[in-house]
Structure formats: structure tokens, C-alpha cells
Length: 493
Image (cartoon, rainbow, N blue to C red; front, side, top):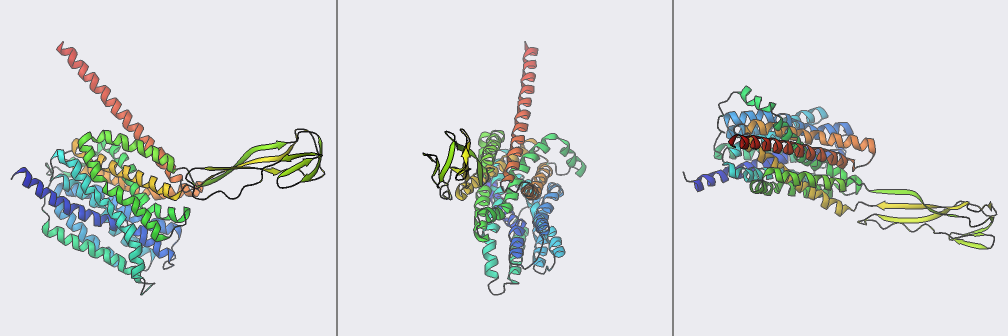
């Protein structure tokens, strides 16, 4: 078979893989919209804690099961694992329309959350069809399936409103049925048209595969993925209530903004794979982590109003306060001008605005001494965290993370060519846990600080840790290589 015909077959499988992963990712993030809608419309009276669990359960399932699913993919091939996953996960989605309690909703969410393991299947399955020089691009294109989150955040609120026109109380039940049909359709398509293929040395035992996970490099890649992928999943859900609370947007508009974050971040993965193939994944990760530090530092500045002491006015001489007006204080026969409080600051300003005024501290007929404070100064700084600027920064950091997810997985076939499924499963597991724990961390930071942008402070610190860790590791490796080369030169001389 010629190389061109081989690549043509690989591209067809890549298209099918990406389509299946996109639908799986849309289903995986379904609860972010559906649960919010059900509580907002008072269809279910779930507490904040129960809502948090329902949002996190599918993400948790999809994370912890990635490793065993990745091992199965290495062992048996992607066709049978992927098609079985798609067909089985459609069942709890159909049953979700019958859920009438928190417990039933939680159990079914746990089961359909298995679609999140599709990433571990697709990574190993896609890699098996491509040579090393194509794997960065191929895995990047496959990773574009992350855009499924944008499909849910953008389309699901409108679908819910449409389904609920005739029956406001039960119309929501058509949405999980609709998603279940999509999974069933792609599962049947996959079963009949996919070609099975396994990575080399797939006859290794499970213990031999798992032993690879002892290597520190796996955990370092997993930490990077916790940031770039876990944060992407977390914010795909967290941005919806963020915009609603901070900027008072509707659920449909908030969903649209969340989709504007999710869609570019998912689609850009193909470009991230191309950059990783062309310039090297390590160099790309330097730029990704650096931009994550910079952008999160800008995003962490909250919408705020700060009042502090400003320039006051002191009595120029000893005397008696003879009159007081909003603009002047008169001591005996001397008029002293004071600044009155300005009108309300302009809302929606891009940059912080400053207002200063003085507040009278004395009363009429009061005796004052020289240098006594008669009007205290007040300075007020307003920062509106302009919604459009905030949205642009959010989109940019999402794009950066999208490129980073492709770069992380470019490393895996280079360092672990025969264990892509198990290593990819482990790295994906860690990243998926980031998507589960992210909203929990963000909500606790919100409770502690009372500031929505506190989540970006966590991202800033975590990004800096990853950047420093990567730089130290690379510097150490380069120094060791230089010492080895120097010894070889000494022996030759």
C-alpha cells in the first residue's frame, strides 16, 4: 500500500474519531447547562452542594476511568472499545429523562460520564494510524473534539427553551433523549465503518503496561494537562455562573460567552499540533505556560471599588468656622475651597478611574487651631473589569490552553511510542480530575474571599509552578547532556 493511500485511510479514521469525540464531549458537559436550567426554573429544588455534585460527577467518572479504558485500547484496539463505549453510554442518557430525584440523577450522571473516557480511546487509536512526523497534527485535530463543550453551552440552553414551550415542566426531558440518540447513531456508525488497529507490542501484559506509570515524566505531563485541559473543562462550566453573577447576563447569553471560550480552545488544538510538529512541543509549552501566567494575572484583577484616604485640608490659621457650604469653608474672613463629591463614575470603562473629594470635618461656630484637619480627603478608584475586555482575555487564555493540550500529547508518542494508551489514559485521568476539582476549588475560593476572580489567582499560581518545574527539568537535562558529551570528547582525545 502506498504512503498516500495509507494516509488517506488514516485521515478517514481521524475524521470518524474526531466526530465521535466531539459528540462524547458535548454529552460529558451536559449537566453544566441542564442542571443549571432545572434549578433556575424551580423544576428541582436542589441545594448548592447537590448542584455542585451533579456538575462534577460526570467529569469525575470520565477522569478516573480513562486509565483502564486506555489500557483496554492498547490491548484490544480502538474500534471495539470506542463503539461499545458509545452504545452503552446512550442508555443512561435515555433513562435520564425519567429521573425524578437527586439520587437517580446522580447515578445516571455517573454512568453517562463514562463518555469522558473517549479521549483515552481516541488518543491511542488515532496514534496507531499515523507515523511519528504526523502524530502532533493528527492528535491536535482529534483534540478539536473538545469543541463539543461549546456545542452544549451554546445550543443546549436554546434547545431547552424550545422543548419547554409546550410543556414547561417536562420539556427538558427531550434534551437527554436527543443526546442519547446522537451517541447511539455515532456508535452504530463506528461499529460498521471503523477499522480496528492496535499499537505495536499490544501483547504486553497489563502489569508491564502499568509499570510505565512509575516514571516521573508521566506525572509531569499529567500536571501540565491538569492545567491546560482541566482548567478548560472547569471553566467551560464555571464561566456560565461567573458571567451571570458578575455581569448580570441571561443564561442564554452566558452560555454563548462560555461557548466563545470553549469553541476556539477546542478548534485551535489542530494548530497546536502543527506548531508542536514544526517547532517542538517543549518550545510550544514555554509559550503556553508563560501566556497562562500573564493572562491569568490580568484576569485575577476583580471588578472593584476602593476607597482610601486622599489629600485633606488643614486650617491655615486659628479661628472660628463662620460658614460651611458644599464647596467652601469659611474661617473668620477667609474662604477655603473644597472639592465636592463628583457624579457617579462612568460604567464600563476599560481602565481604572479615579475620583477625589473632601468631606467636611468641622461644624459652624467651631473653634479650630492652625493645622487642624477641617476636611478629610477621600480617593475612590473604580475598576469595572469591562465585560468585553474580560471576554477577550478569557478567549485568549482558552486558545493558549488549547494549543497546550496538543503540545502535551505530542510528547507522549515521542517518549512512550508503545504505551500511548496507558500513558495517555493516565495523563488524561489527571487532566480530567482537574476538570472535576477545578469548580470545587473555585467555589471554595469564592466562599473564602467573596471574589469571583479568585479562581484566576489559583490559575496564576499553578501556571507559575508548571513553568518553573518545566524550566528546571529542561535545564537539568541539558546540563547532564553537556557533561556526557564532554566525557565523550575527553575519551576521544
